Image 1: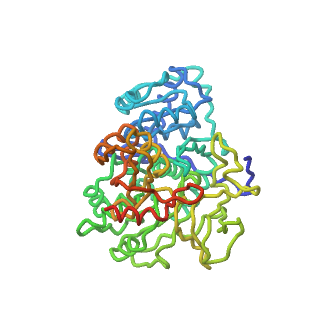
Image 2 (image 1 turned 120 degrees about the vertical axis):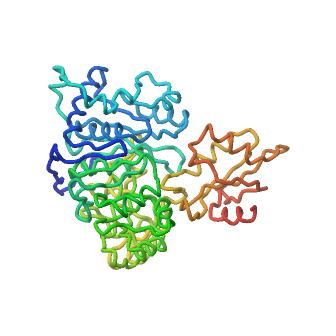
Image 3 (image 1 turned 90 degrees about the horizontal axis):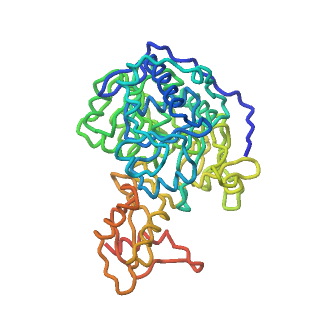
Length: 499
């Protein structure tokens, strides 16, 4: 769907070479270093005859090199895909059938999973090597012009749909420009101060920190994984840290640490990745931890609604709200017949605006947008009289565990592929640590025994670890409607009866 927006696309000033771009336990790097890396990266792609009509792929753990490579793709206008390194071979194969990168940079571990002809070790881009080579651009590289038109696709992202089939979301530069502008009006770190990045680098949540920092000319501090003790030290003692993006599971672990607090110059923790727990917001307020609960998804290029930043002494009213939708984007709450409803009435959430994507790859727009270009998020909630948004259910049956999206249909399919399982139903149960935990009920084939550990072991080759149920129980029947659909609202009762 070709969308037209009247709003002027935001612009940003280029960063200064001497300013800090990236910090980690391996050292500090400036924007000048990034500029040098871009030359190395561009010449590398030409040397390997990369097809610039295709995206560059990455499948590797978080590293300074991966951050530099993603940043270089953005600055050079080269579309990219960052795959989930925990995905199974079969999952990756399906994604590669959907869209084929011209070249994939992968870790040694990931290379074992992929049978792809255009694949090379990401170690070829290692920073110590790339920043110490005197790069001389060839004629083709010298003539290269970065493709930075706002309507160009900057990346492709995979998202679990409720059908169980991963959808491919092409995101355009326009979306990131508007997202960064809206976010900056609420919060932007000072130059040479850190935005903590400990989120995975295959989700828009983690990648948007890199891209927004590039547009702002500000700094990132990268951590390979979430480390509560180290983050506690950073946020409470190091005045260079001004922001951190976390999911609820991470925030709970920090708050559970004795004496957790943040220093006086710390601006905010940006919270996303699932429904907002008012008790969690209250704990932050009581502890003097500034928090920005937000709402967004891959299709909106991360957050599209957020609460304003308050001083530690401030109080959110009400605490369960995720704030207002960023202008110039629009929101409607609609009933089951598609009609807009008034304040404080629940319904499905529809969005429209320059921050909303233009449609899934290889899927008809009619399944995603209405005739006026409104996007059906699949989420449910309501607005109050102040246009504050309240999320009630995320994408209907989708399970959000530790900030990761899990389609129950995908897990059910994996379970029923096993020879001793006749039927399966998968759903999420509330969990204090993970937000939700994945659980399952199964009906074994006749004359087959049920062994939970055997099932879990069998699933490990089919599903990423976060998708594997924490608990599987046996039942005689799975509740269904007259049309044969699983009655998911009754599954939690069934599970509690079986434990």
